[in-house]
Length: 348
Image (cartoon, rainbow, N blue to C red; front, side, top):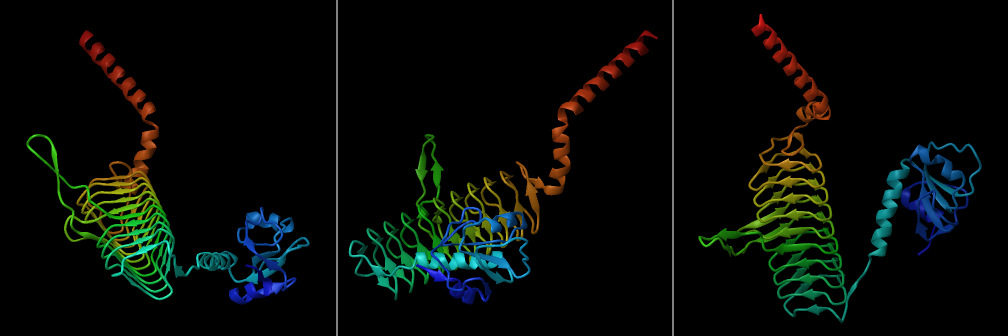
């Protein structure tokens, strides 16, 4: 699809400087842009590229003052970065705008499909499934029996949602996500074997949650594993049975959360963090990358390390960690001096 500078300016409430009828059909970085593309300038260190870019249209801040001639048409806005982000969102919506149900999808007669829903090729929709209005189910998605999908939710190819799980409104599940597999429950036996404990709960994902590719969220043993509204999960995260993650918490890739952990709201958990089971993580907590969490964390705490400790303690300690060889050498020299002094005293 093509859009003119005038159309884009109207959407962004900006002003055109140059040819208002010039058209673009793609978006690009300012240093890589070609004719027919749109870019933006927000970071001053990229200013030099605006004089050489081949982009047909560049979004700039209102206060940008060029020092050389510019061949591109400019669209001046209050905040170029935010304006471009808005365009990316609109572009993504247009790109993923799909409707209709493929004849190659399997849909149980008992399923309830809302208005303007898209269901792609080879998707499987089980018994008593409910899909809300304007949701998009891409090819090769599996929706088990009794699954509920809210309105305007996007489920990308290859997602598997086991039976009885609930997904809210305006959620996004990326390729390879698995929702509702069995929790890791095995009871040790006297003969050293393990007996599987049936996992009969479910997963509840509230509104406006985004889940990255190949992340897994296990069903509860009893009750529900719960992901509260606004949560953002990166790729390759493991969320175990009966975990609850509070509102607007964000978690980076390769984090593993053991069973029955309760994570508060507005937390930030970096990559490769490991949380032991049955912990309580307070609200507004920040956990640094590769931290190992073995105890409860109070509201507002910032922790680092494995085992994790308070960030102020960690920062003081890290200075000494780096100097350990020097410190050890000094201690050894002091010990030698003490021994020499003891020998001299005995001789006297």
